[in-house]
Length: 234
Length: 111
Image (cartoon, rainbow over all chains, first blue to last red):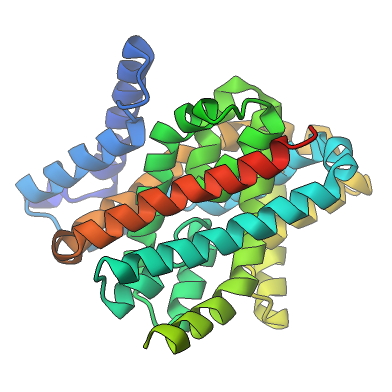
């Protein structure tokens, strides 16, 4: 029985079915609180605990799903290409906002975690929380964080951004596709971008751009900023 | 056949990106380099839109799903999350709001 359940077939099917059902649930009730990613993660974790299956087993069984993460990041290039002219027209402002956003993100998450008494490893693992998984893992690894913990933070940030990001932006009067896309992409990477994809291809394109630029800038800045902060705080 | 060709292009770009990342030691992941290569390839007409369109749309529409296996990994960090839930959640939420505000307001200015 256990061998039957602990297989790629069962784990992939479970993941897809729960995801489809929770997406239907969200469409029916139209509230961002019923985030399909969050529900699916919760149900799968419960299933693994009940069937006494390790995460390592689930992870290797579902590689056929996570394999497409990198190609889907590459696909953002297609969305970007369609809006290249608009990006060129606003290039300076876009770069400025991304530099400011990336710095704000690293500095704020690090110092706030420090003030509230987080451990050093947690703080470093938190620093690249807003960038897409592969880059975040690299930064965390390089600086002495815990890469798998960083992945957990990246997902948490992504889910929170997907649930509350749009509502908050509306509150502060940010509505156009360029500003919404760039800020959500820079804050909550691919999950933030996915949450606005239904609003139109321009939203996805700028989300992808925000995610890419923030990833690039953070990958370059984070090691220096972390080193400096560690020097000041410890 | 059309889909297979398109998938092959994406995997080829991915491999090219990984190779560049590996040999140049750029602080960029292979997928991000692959994404930039796709933009350049399309702009220079080395890659035709019709050769990537369908798979690109499929991947973009289902991006969130590909994160689920990584997200389930949250279960491995139960202890840290329980011990340090306060600094972690305050830092994540406030920092997220700050980034949204900074980027959103700079972009909104004069646009």
